[in-house]
Image (cartoon, rainbow, N blue to C red; front, side):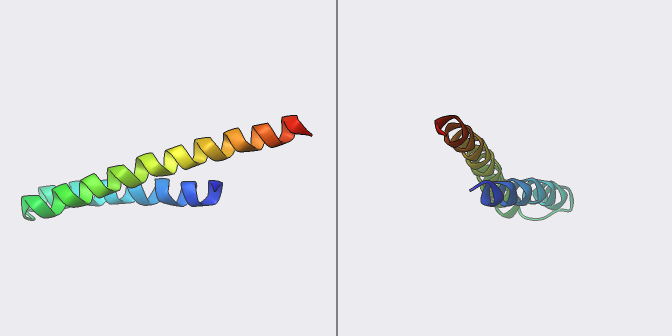
Length: 64
């Protein structure tokens, strides 16, 4: 779960940066807004999965 979270987090950051480049290059508003929104969703989802993986690991080590 941690690996997936890290991948989604990185993908979200890259997509957010790309949507900023699209915004300043004159791309239609709908395109960069949708990409930015999707990227922020992926960024938050990746963060949640990383945190959840860390909490699960802590629970497993304390249960032993």
